[in-house]
Amino acid sequence: MTSRELFLQTLRREQKDYVPLFPRDLTLGMDMLDIRTGEIFDGKYDSKLSAECVLRLQGFLGSDATVGCIFSYSLESFGGTIKYADKGIPYASVYPFADPENIDGHEPFEIRNGIMEGMRNASEIVRKKRPDLALLSNVPGPVTMAGFARGLETLMMDFLTDEKLAEKILGFCTEAVTEQMKYTSEDLADGVFFASASDNPDMVGDEGFKKYSLKNIEKINKDVHSAGLLSIYHPHGVFSTDDRQHLLRDSLKTGIDGFQFAEGNEPEGIIEVCGDKCAILGGVTSYTTLLLGPEKRIIKDTDRYLSALKDYYYIMTCSCSLNRGQPLDHLKIMADHVHEYNGGKA
Image (cartoon, rainbow, N blue to C red; front, side):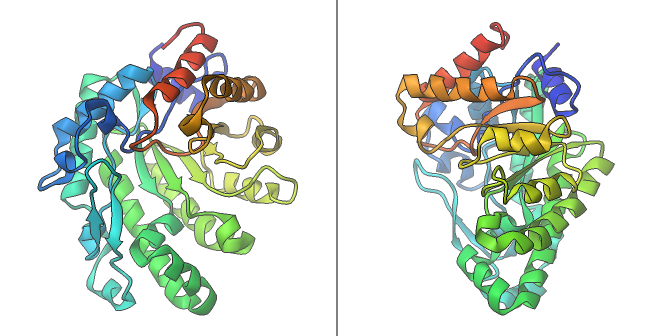
């Protein structure tokens, strides 16, 4: 079977013999070509160069799935500004809804701008060249998108002082995420990845997590499944302890096909809730083990997750996305160890 088939069978909970590898690369592929970030983003988005970066990293690591493009956010559509440092990652320097009155001058469908078109075109190139790979559309979670649009600290204050405004921004951003999901995945992707670092109960509280994130994830996920696609939800925060597992149970009730746990979680606690009810993703911590090494620690931590999750529907990832500056040789150590575990199938 192809990498794509093995990945999707795992996500559908149909096979456990092979552990697919999905190091979710958002910008790291640019380090493979040693190019400036602006070479993709200055002026018109360079889809061919973006696809080349993605494919070069995939060839280096032997991953089974990709997001298909070098990723950025379409905040310019709503009046925001994204900066692109030479060897850095895209970041917001102007939040479009810092002045909340700006919302009334925009519509969610405007997110389909030139950046979005370029990312889709890059993914189309990757799909054409490597139809054997699974392809996931990467979209922000609802609270994460609202944080990009409003400014995260300001949004957190809105939750406390102006809940009506917070819900208005979240409603707009949920529709914008749905528009992005449809545009970047239709007739192209196999599934949708909800990148949800700020959809985090440690930040918004248990009730806020259910009200602001899960309620909207469930809404978007219905559209994902209606389109015949699979879904993966990746909130940050702790879900594996006894006092937080109820939030993981509530997450599964949204209908997601896969749950990726972030750093700070123990796989055993995730297994207690997910078991065979949902595919499990997660793995070596990106910002400590993979960043700092050494090799023995990377192999030890990789073994730990493979051993704990081998009897479940498990897809090996890192704790979060991969971006510029992550040591490529450290990732190669992890990837090679996964391939060795799978008997050399890559």
